[in-house]
Length: 124
Length: 115
Image (tube, rainbow over the protein chains, first blue to last red):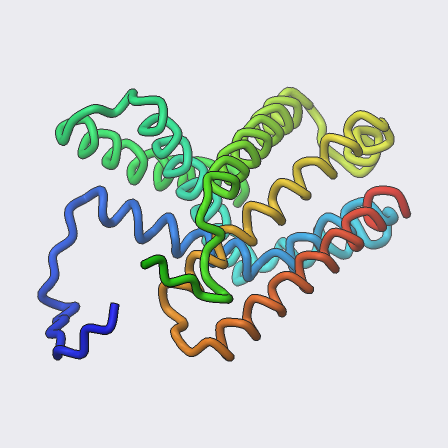
């Protein structure tokens, strides 16, 4: 705990295994969603409050830049969801070895991107 | 010797469990809501508010949001403990996060029951 020896952490030289990418993206996507929370709550409020605020919100969400932000949030949500489900699968011992760990990581990365594209295309 | 830090972890299973229980609540809510919305041929303001006029939907939505806020607290605390080392800064971020999430809780009730 009180180790004062110098450390050499060359972040650009460190190569993560694929499950490492799922893990750090789980953290980043969670942080993105946390930061976006007030905006998402405001959107829920505007969608429910009255037909005027609902229309206002719908008009705002029609802007391309706003849609791009929504897509990022959608990806963050989907990645966080699937990485979380993978975690639960690990907790229940459904993922037992390195091959399964790597394969499930690929599934998480690809499904969240594929669903973002699919739902994004529908949203657009 | 166990070196306990004032703003450290809770050294227990409780938060680990709550993080997973809240995750399952949220996943179930999102799945049910997504299926319901996809089944609607026509999604407009009336359908949307009609859904939230049901007490069961409001209750489940509030349960979802409370799960979300607690889940977010556990996650943010973990991130702060990993990357923010000075105790003062860590404490300040923790306090702001807790206050923010408590305010979101009040706001959520106002949104769901104040429409």
